Image (cartoon, rainbow, N blue to C red; front, side, top):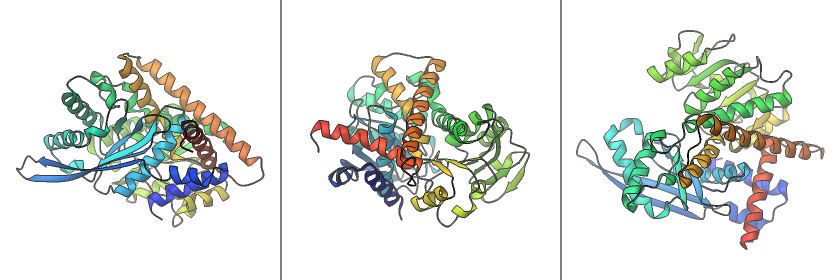
Length: 418
C-alpha cells in the first residue's frame, strides 16, 4: 500500500471504531483544495529551472490551515495529500485551532547553492501567495527546510503585501519573531511522550531504560538528547551513513556535535559501527523512536522489532499491517500525530505571540508546550484504556483517531457541513 493509502486506511479504521457516518469519511478523506504551481528560478549557473510546488489544504473545520513545507527529491503530490491529512488529525488531537495542510517542492536542497535555495523559497511564496496568510494558511518547516527558509518566505510575503507579517510563517529565527523553543520542540515532545508512556507501562519509568533512535536529524537528535537528560540510556542512533550501537549507552551531546560537524553519525568515536541505517530499528531496547521517514516498519521487517514501546517521531513510519502485528505482540505504538505534535503545538504558540506582537521567554514557552503535550497523552491514554475495557483489541492509534475525528466531526456539524 502507498503512504496515502496507509493514512486513509487508518482514518477509515478510526471512523469505524468511533461509529462516524460514511458521509463524514467521504469529507475527511479528501482535501478541500490542491494547488500546484510552477516556480521558475534563474540559477546561479545561468540556467532557468522550473520547479513544481504544491500546497494541499486538507481541512479547515477547526481553523486556518497549518502544516509544513517539505523540500525533498522524492516528494510526490500523493505524499503531500497524506501528510496534509495527518496534519488535520494532529492539530485536532492537540486541541489547537487549526486545520491541516502540507506543501513542498520535489527538490534536493543540498544540491542548490544558498543563493538558489533562497530564490526557490521566494518563488514558492510568490507562486502560492493567494492561498497563504496569517488567518488562512500558516506554513512551517518540514524535511529539507529550516528556520532560515521560513525567514526568507516570511520576508517575501511581507514584501508582497507591503508590511511585516511575522505570523504567516512559524519556526522562524528568534531575531525575526520566532521562539527558540521551536528548534527542538518536535524532539522535546517525543521525549516527553516517551517519558509519560514509560511511567505508565514500564517498571521504574524512564530512568535507565534503553532507547534506540532511527534517524538523527532534528527530531531524532532532540528526542535522544532530552531522553538522555531524563535519565534514559540511548544505546543506538542512525542516519543514512549507518548505525552506531553501544549497549552501555551513547554520549548524546557528543553524538550531536559529531553529526552536526561531520554530517555522519558513524564518525562518533565510540561504539559498534553498523553499515545498515535500519539496524537501529532492531536492537534490544525498551523504547524505539523511528524518527526518519515514512514506511520504515513494515510486514517484511516487523518480526525484527524488539522494543516494548514505539514512539513515532517521523510521519507514517509504521504501516497499518505492521502496527497490528506489533499490537498482537503487546508492543505499544504511540502514533505519529500524537508523538510528534510538539512542533505544531509550538508553532501555534509562536503564532499567538506573533499575532499579538508579544514575547514569552524560553522557560515559560517550554512549560506551556509541555503542559499541552502531557495533557494530549493523558487524554489519549484514558481513551485507550476505555476502549480496551470493552474486551476487544484496540491500539493507541485507535484511541487518538477517535478523539481527533470526534472534534472535527463536531466542528463540521456545528458549521452545517454534515
